[in-house]
Image (cartoon, rainbow, N blue to C red; front, side, top):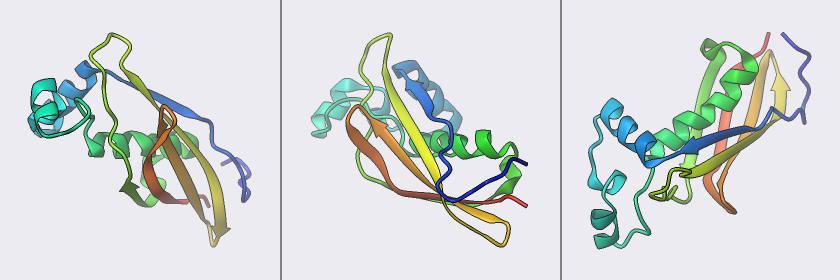
Length: 135
């Protein structure tokens, strides 16, 4: 286990999301809400376009912690607040969600990690926090 200190930054994680990613996640999660694959339905509801699933955005974000700590079983808790949807354009390039994180507290063998997630210039998760066992 590496030395861990308050203020340590975790390596940035960039997740590319395309319409294909969203459709595959729909199948895996059995969430077939049409806003996740139909531009027509999303626009009819007043949305800016096809949206990635919030749970995809949340789940992908935890990977910044599990990649860093090396063992997903060390995660004790994880919570987020959804602040903005991730709009997925109908292009081959899709869009990127960029996750950054840093250690905010370290006590009794547990590190608290604050996570940020942005798509373009907008935060898509707020108050994202994880606690991991580091002893």
